Length: 82
Image (cartoon, rainbow, N blue to C red; front, side, top):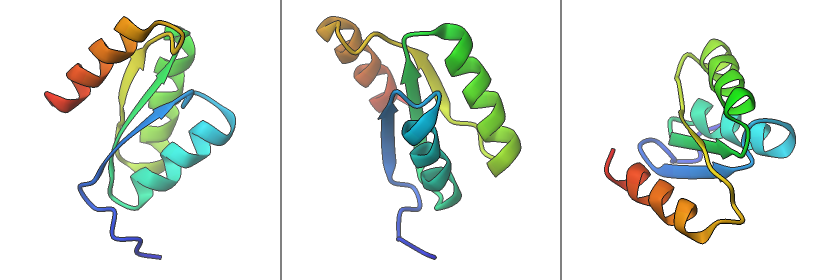
């Protein structure tokens, strides 16, 4: 299915597992430029590795706490500067 997401930018907060992981995978398969984040560095690195294996595309991965507004802003800035 072509959802016309090629080259669109998506950031999935909580993208290391569950629904967030599934969303990231679907978006990667549709050609979107995906960034994923989680509080756990280990979980987000493992998720990025798995997503790359499953889709052939590696998402940008960030260890970011969604409860910290400054860290969220810093991550957003980093994503937009890619």
